[in-house]
Length: 60
Image (cartoon, rainbow, N blue to C red; front, top):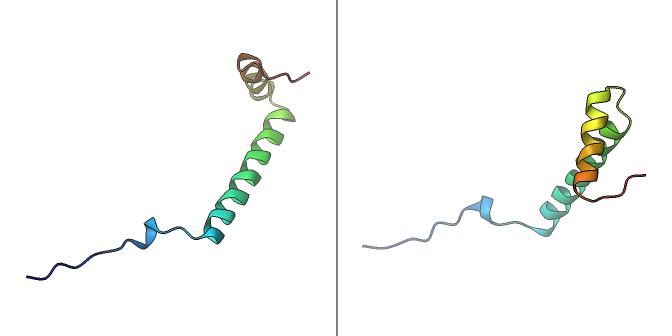
């Protein structure tokens, strides 16, 4: 019997893949902050505002 080692390509992460993931996360985060901060929907803006205060993050 011979045993073979199976490598999963999804477990191997290259530096370029990490960079793409980091940039994507930064863009998504900035879009969410922009949407919550400038939303004309009062409930969305107030929820983000209250969350910042509950985390002791100064926002004004």
